[in-house]
Image 1: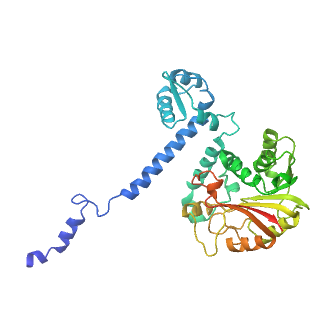
Image 2: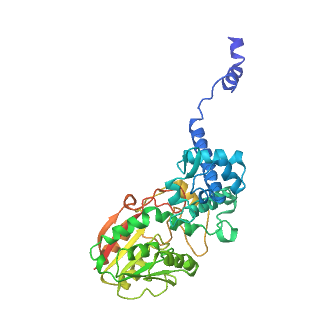
Image 3: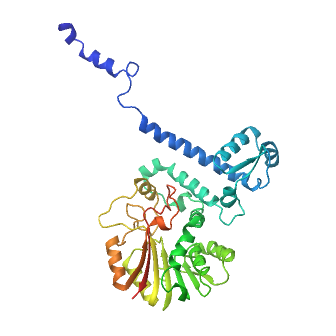
Amino acid sequence: MHEYAAFPHESAREEADPLRSAPAAPPAGLYALLQTASLGYKSFLALRAALDVGLFAHLEEPQDADALAERLGLDRRILSPLCGLLAQWGLLAEEDGRLRTSDEARIWLDPDSPLRQQPVTENMGETFRLWERLDSALIQGPFDPQRAGIFGGAFLPALAAEALTGEVQRTADLVAAAPGFEDLRDLIDLGGGHGLYSLALCARSRELRAEILDLEGVRDMAEANIARFGDGRVRFTAGDIRSASLGRERDAALLFYNPGGKRADLLERIRACLRPGGLFVSKHVFYARNEGSKSPLADLEWNLTAFPGVHKQANVYRFDGDLCTEEYLALLERHFEILADHGPEAFAAPDLGKFGDRLDSRLIVARRR
């Protein structure tokens, strides 16, 4: 009894010795997270490298890896497994030992395609650089992205590229299905940015004309899309939707994913610019009364940045002065008849785990009373 009682700490040390016994909790959850991070990040870097060296621009005709390496001045030993990886993903196709761009890659990754997604990868790279400074943000607070030199300008082109994967087309179809759409002649696209929604709606109505009202900084992108996809019926006007004239007796107004887009004062300005019977189409992520986080990961990314003059709340896509879902719908129904209310499954592309994800956004089509 005396000898046993003298060494209780010795027994405890033996049980806790990592070389003598298996851990009390296996690392399954941690290692699953690390594996996902490792495979995902390396896959992203492989795809980005293939885009950066112009791989998809030089494989319209089948070639073997040796000829491709010589043509592009690349290392054959590294290029070969990279091409194997791209083929495994379905982005390259093999014919008699030679490689060519797959049909999918020709649509989405060819630099000459109007649907090319390279801006999305560029924006994701910018976002990763922001996340690499998370430790500094924890100490110093959020960054002003422009002053910190974090974003290189791919954000808006990326939103346009993502929208072209189906959201623009499906959204335009849903709006065009609204009663009276065929009678619309004059549309204002508030904060319309890239202008693709206005262009898509004009493509569905020969009589419709649209004005994109947004800040001067997006003019070049909007006008490039107007030149590429338009036929002279869409124009860009520089202005702040919070203060610029919205006009009178408009047939329709669009307001998609805009800071301040869920405020009562802006809703009243939109009502005032429409004629009776005019359409108002809204698309935003809404928060119900007392609703908390929709995505802790998205909230974390949201809080890494702070733009001058923009008053964000803690949850992603939430701003000071926003109406909650119940308040927004109540105010909307006071002045409008809601014709359709669609969830993201009806229009949105899959989320990519970054700022710009649609989450549980809603597309609301309403008619002014």
